[in-house]
Image 1 (tube, one colour):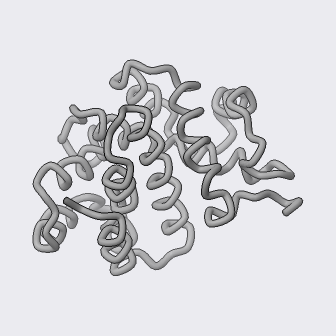
Image 2: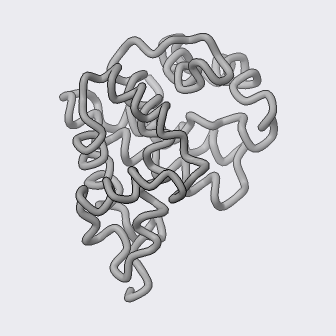
Length: 188
């Protein structure tokens, strides 16, 4: 089973751009919170989140086309590779998210971008970000416009959850690591 330490090492071998490293961590910690919500293995879900964009920096136009083979060679289980591939469903893969792990990754990938953007605008960063404030930003399509809200809604529907509930879980997961994520705010 993939450990968080292995995932960090593998990710570091391919990802060097700071914004992509931060994104991987945002997704990692949000996935850990989602795992706790579903009563699953927190570290394992974090590891999958950490590694989800493994090939993106080197192959942005062929995202997830250079993931399965090297991760298989690195010893990942087929279901771990499948989970990573599923977050590109309908965009760059046809691997439909089926498990809660896969559906969560599909959903939080885009969702964490809006959370991060909202937190960065606040004097206290994510430390006092409430879901109500997040929802205002979520509804404003001009805010963090590159984050695909349709995918987030599709993922929430797959999970049978409301956006606000998934966002609350992710905000909590990211809050615990606010300093590492650079989300303590301008007052810090």
